[in-house]
Amino acid sequence: MEHSKPLSHTITDKDAFIRANTRLRPVPLTPEILLYVADEAVPLWHKTEEEIGEAGLPPPFWAFAWAGGQALARHILDHPAIVQGKIVLDLASGSGLVGIAAMKAGAAAVTVADIDAFAGAAAKLNAAHNHVYISVTEEDLLLGESLQSWDIILAGDIFYERDTAQRAFDFLQRHAANGATVLIGDPGRSYLPRDKLRRIADYSVPVTRDLEDADIKKTAVWTL
Image 1 (cartoon, helix red, strand yellow):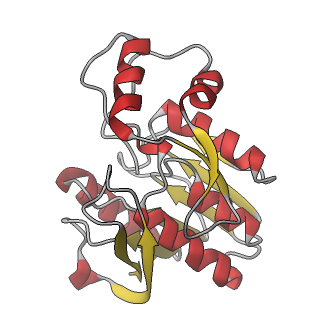
Image 2 (cartoon, rainbow, N blue to C red):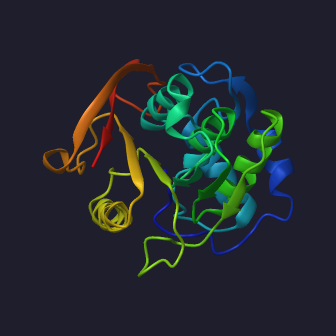
């Protein structure tokens, strides 16, 4: 998941902050991947605001393995031919889970994109612990026309907020029209444009009730 706005201040050593406030654990649906994840969302959220000295920050999306990302990562690991030898973008990457899965499945190169600097730092740490290399960008790719292109664009759990969802779908449609393959992981978020997508796989994803309304989220992988 990608934040709706960037942090206006920075913690000097983000790596140390991440290590101090999360634990390295296997992802439920993809136990072959380890991530730095938080036990609870709200305490970490407050801790981040205290450290930065700013209230009203977005939630720490980077500190959790969201259902859409887990399903998409599982799908990529189980069907590596999708990404093998390809140039891949993990859009609104959060922890970097989906991008890490793509590299493990044999992608030629992966860029993870999230406007939150903490997400970028977490993704790098997570990639290192999973023995893969990813490129990180904090550029908001949903703004205007991107001159970059990718073979595969992966988007996990991005359709949770109206404006972000519309911008994300416009971005994905534009790149699909230029030849990119688009895969979306989503557990039924409110703004997923189901009528414009084709469902290709279903997963039952273990999640935490601190974030979701159930212990297991029925989650699908979609394509345009």
